[in-house]
Length: 321
Ligand code: DP6
Image 1 (cartoon, rainbow, N blue to C red):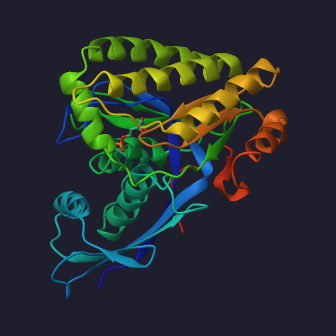
Image 2: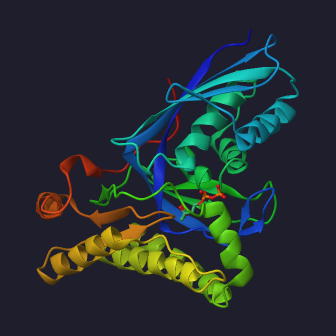
């Protein structure tokens, strides 16, 4: 029996999105991305290697699961550590409701940290980020707290996440609205592949996103919330326009998403500064500042149950429990 190791990773929401791979098996992206790690959504994962097991055993929120992607990831860890034992992996997602936000980002960041240490490796944050990347691209950024980025790179060694600013100096909050939707119709993995292969606007997306990256990075340095919010909102909608322009076309927004978007615009018209972003599902996240949280939540509660509204601030980096 090896030692049981537990790690906690927080999820992150991209302000400049990753949407497309240069290398699918190594998960090298087409562009660099930038995110905010959130304090309210996280995953705790414990791993123990055990020579008596005949296969890896995974439980998520106390339910046993079989998942090839998880096994592939554990094989990467075994190879790196030069061991052959299988492992018992237990993962708990700390999210307010069942829906949508326990992303693969916190899951693979926590698994990379727990599994590598349990396997006897002692990786620094950069190496952990590279390892997490083999599970899910967005997990590279969840190794870090606050504002983080994923440097695209061009091979296994040069593609990793890094800290942009932690602790965060900017007054910034994210309000997640958990909307009902059928479980992801098209996973981000599948969606981005269709976009890369078929959207005639894909090259423009890359060009524009490289620009958005430098604008948001500068806004963080300048403590310029307005530029950060505006650019993040534009970047998100540019990503979603790739889904519409793909063949076959697909869409993550639903009617509730549109309702939240209209509410954000109405709030803005009333002098309450806020912006929205969305990922590969119907949930909307509102980017705002502390002074406006109450106003925005009050408005949201006219349409959505309060347990579907979750306010987060900047979250911390990976840690061992
Ligand atoms: C829209 O990291 O889930 O959230 O690398 O295939 O696991 P894989 O994809 P994933 O994609 C995230 C897409 C996004 C934008 C982002 O987080 O940058």
